[in-house]
Length: 369
Image (cartoon, rainbow, N blue to C red):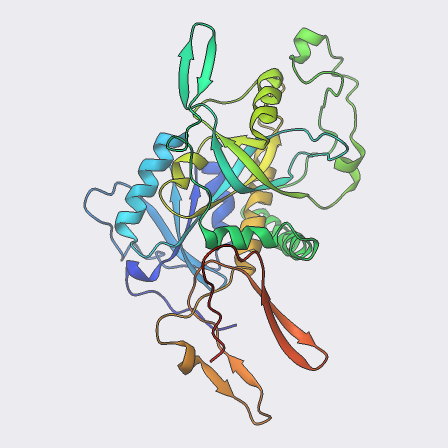
């Protein structure tokens, strides 16, 4: 892997990681390989930008990390707009943290600590409240746009078995490192076995149902499966916490949602972004904070594993200078600069092969100089 030198200016940062909660930030910093601001900030910020930044390196990428001052779409939109004013080369924002999951139907079980990746984001609470009920604004002008083409191509890879296997195995390795690093700092990011789960009814509280908390239902996959699942789909984003099983099911069915969170809609409109969040509850009245720290760690693990699969794009004029030919005539290339997209490469019957996927619309040019 090519080494990454310390950036000399804000223009050299192209990727941001955004967190809404301190516990999400604490998990995110554990995957940084080094920090560029150990001896104080040297990059500054643009006039009018009130964000506080942490800068460093994750793998081969220079990363700027932002902790929001408040939860919600307004806070995330304002912070991301300020981020763009200071870091003008920003190409991708990764929103990582915790969320409420939608229990799967038809055998697709979403267990606690499973990680969701956004294919698109739906702002479900934008609309008008009438005496007869709430009506969501659903016009083309009021909806969030679909993800940028480069982001769509990247996320599409993680819907394939090959791409998801790579992502999941990479995330599992990162999680082990996070847990070791956290142990050194006397923090705990461990799975909570035997979580309480009232399978009979998710729409009411245990107090209302008279659940016997002395007899929890142990979900076999939670107890025995060392892995966590990764889901790609549509995520609901709004300024209110969903804490009702009945409302969760209504919204999930209406908009095809797999999870709920509170910042994605704000970031989505400002910069190409991917929401990567881990399920810490089921967005119902059983909501509690017991799984939050472990969920934050699994989301961060997937975030770093995703960066490992993120394809860098040559900077202007670099393509020819980076290619070298060895004594046997094979072509080699050092790592280019960053940019979204996804490309796989390997050998097939003695030939080097590169392929991409999900090329849609317009004209796509592939250069093999």
